[in-house]
View 1 (tube, rainbow over the protein chains, first blue to last red):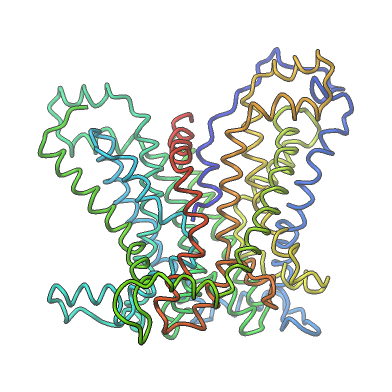
View 2: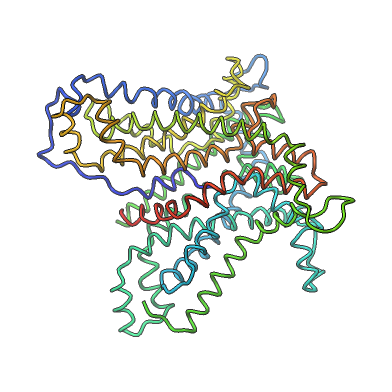
Length: 317
Length: 268
């Protein structure tokens, strides 16, 4: 699914205000005389945003300091929920799985996306719009639908095993979702399938900005496709690489729908991830404090990744 | 750029291979949806869709999804346009601070806020209402929408507003008659994105309507899956029913959508 930041990162730079642009301090704009008007315009957005994003975030931090079952009285426990998380094997496993999923959601799609975008940048591709649409299509479909489709593919009598048996690889056929290691890999493969098209499109956007003359002069110097890629294409899309990594890493950390529908975290704890732990702790275990502590850790992790990547982006400019 | 015939062929084969891989799971679920159920004669069975539609009560749940999507898109667009208008064209105290607050909201994951939201709304007796499902999604879409519309309004030439002022237009008239008509493509992109996010959202409707009366389509598919796990054909048909509206919207608009994404980046 396309993250909100995906589009935010690709917005044209706004026009800067010139020094002669100043207007009288009393009037907010040429058509507005009352200084109250801007606040009235911002109010509806700010109210719903504050009430349904900022306030719940604050409440999550607050709840994480209590022991509460969701009903009846709660007890203040300070940082105990966080201390418990540090020693919680299941939570540590969820974090570990999230990092394994990052390989499948972010790193492999990056490599594949680079290859696919570079090929298209080299041009002369027949039916390019069709390829783009097909490769991007997985992003559009609801994750629940994706989950249902892939669950059938990975089933013991599903499409994957049928295919393996048809080509004589019977020995490889197995109940993919029933074996701990393979179940996590299966979720990962779905992630690769989901994200490659988005990464390709982001990188292609960056590559389209590279002037043709750069490639032409490289060719005059005798560069082949591979040298061209490493000397010109790759350095030019560093910014887009950073953006796509942020998006896909965050997607890996938030894999809720897939896990909920395909494996419910199982077999055992083989495919549980932080976002699934938030749900499980709050709704199934009725441990709201612990669920909110996981939620806060998840939010902090996502902020940290955003911050880190922005830093890297700034350092490169 | 000119490339050799051999490379050209290789490039096409690689792209074709990946396009097939991207499409195979979708094709596989379509084939499964048409396949015979237990005890049925071999051959295609398009009536699986009718059956899935009936027993999954998808008429009802698609209606709920459509209702939620319309509410979220309309409210998020109105709030985003008004706030984006203020941030993009007006000077006022605290504008930067409030704007950064919205930007910060872009980073807040749904997973971090739904649990406290659920319990607080339950205390207020608001769970199992349309408001409980729509308001959190409006809030998340508004954070992005404000950012998007502000950029759009800032990119418009100053002279538009100034000309409107000379004609004696007030703030709302200027927005409605001058600035919005000039921003229709940006507004349409925002509408499509918010529609897509809302239609596909899973966690919020799952938590906020525990009674099950207000199920959205993706949620009803998950429930359907729980009840008809053994009937692969029906489950696949149900999945296609839930995915169809958004896929159709995408396929109709994909040219503009993909071009918008490609051009957006090249303008940086």
